Length: 214
Image 1 (cartoon, rainbow, N blue to C red):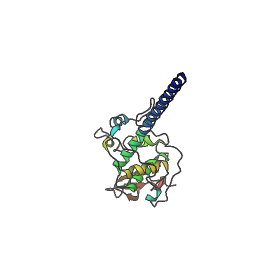
Image 2: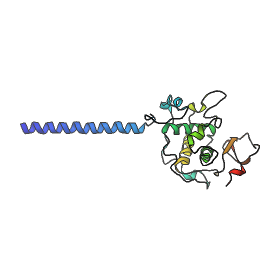
Image 3: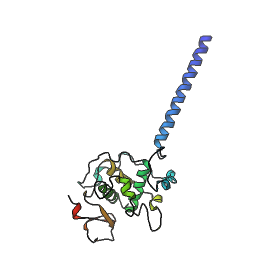
């Protein structure tokens, strides 16, 4: 009887330990599945606190299979120097939304916007930090509108095509404009004094300076 009792106690103990392990793994997996809570000490740019207020309604991630290279015929690519691996989830949410506001007519239009932003990180004229480029004063009113003192991107819901374009640009080196294209305006602009017109992509017209052409 004593041996049976000991065996029963051992069995119950093992079941309890196994249950705890399974519970711990489920909690850890849940935290990985919802990584929008910033870690202590994490650097967050101006305006991100606004974003945190609506995290629960923010854009869900696209899977890695979306946004394949076959979406565009362009030959433009850029070496992935792992410059963007340390972007926080909140920063990527901001990118999706800002790019979407600048152009969300489809994959190509969004890819051109994020390509232009990332081109700037390779230029001596701008910061090599992508979020500093996006949040730079008086550059992208979709991020911050000085006239209204608001952050227009906050309530934006980007399409899956837009998210895929941003992901492809960040992690697959995809571009659909040359590296010297650093400027764009809405398609209402057919010309821009002092600049040369490259092309209209989506609902934006892209421009460049001769000095930026390699």
